[in-house]
Amino acid sequence: RILSEVYQESLLVNMSERLSGQGIAFATGLLAGSIATLVLASRRENEGKQRHASEEDVSSSSPSPSSSKPQSASIQQNSDASQQNHPTKSSRLPPEIRSEMLSRNSLYFSSNNNDGGMDRITDSSVLIVGLGGVGSHTAHMLARAGVKYLRLVDFDQVTLSSLNRHAVATLNDVGLPKATVLCNHLRQICPDGERLVLDPIIKMYTGDAEKDGGMLEPPEGREKWDIIIDAIDDVPTKANLIAHCAKRNIRVISCMGAGGKADPTRVHISDLRSASRDPLATAVRQKIRQIGKREAKANGIKITNGSGVANGGWLSCIDDDSKLAVVFSSEKVVAKLADITDEQKEEGMHNFGAVDNMRVRVLPVLGTMPAIMGQALAAMALCELGGKPFSPVGAERVGRNVRH
Image (tube, one colour):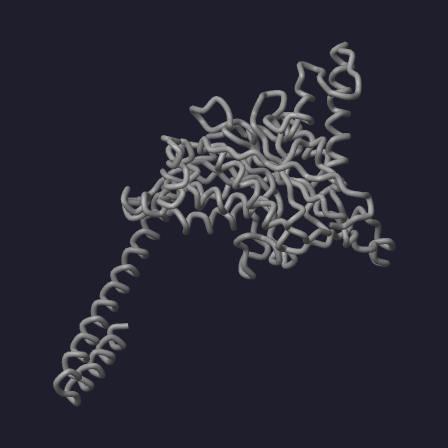
């Protein structure tokens, strides 16, 4: 590298000797700029090596933060992301830099006498379950907008087919956990581990308290999550998460089906009962009612269809968008699940799922739709956190066979 620098400098000196008048001044300035750039690059490289060496020393001499957690929780976390939550001197962002990064959002939330909106966002904690095409876009935007604490839950890994819709994954990320990939990218946006706390959990949410451990527990020092984002595409676990939030009066914003659809003008936000033309929403409603009826029967409570108010009233979340808001598309599904292949029939469908009891058939997804719906989740969450909520316009009822 030193020989390369000397060679470049000699070329610039020779250039300056051949020129006269303005040419000499120009070449001299070019030479000075080149030397400054090389010095700066060398300094950054040395700082990077020193920081990497210090992190290796710390990781080898001190236990991982997750090692102090109870073994029963069995929560896997990305060690690199955990270490990055403890910023070094070089990773801390000066207040003026952070302020400028969030300046446009600050202007938005400070208008109309909405004092303190940005402060609430930068002190908020959000849990996101599901980091695929929808959840990755939501997490990406919440991190850019200044949310302080993000717990990111997903058991799955990035695949080649994920690359058409995941917010940040690249070809080099294939095979890595989605939570890890997302945290690595978000840390590049905000290297300061005090201003952005990333808590990745590489584990499947099941709804079973023993299996899930402390996955849904709020961060230390907080009574509950400010918002929980549901970006799960599996009906039973999706219903279990919504029921968990409704029983504890935790605000939840949920995304319904993004597969087989393309029209952005048919995306809406409403209560769960009003989500029409969405097979996933229909299945989730039915599952939530089953959970409510089963619990009501076990507790000797009479339940009737209709309002769904039973078992302490938590089933009213189906009709109350202040408890449960859903993002859905009223467009008719125009692309169905892929056909079962001869190989799947021959070897047995159960051998082709990522995990037991999960969907096996491939769902066609245009990458734009999960991105739009994920951004809609982020928009609603940020506006509520910042004290500037909006009132969604309800979807019009349309005929069964009408696509638009």
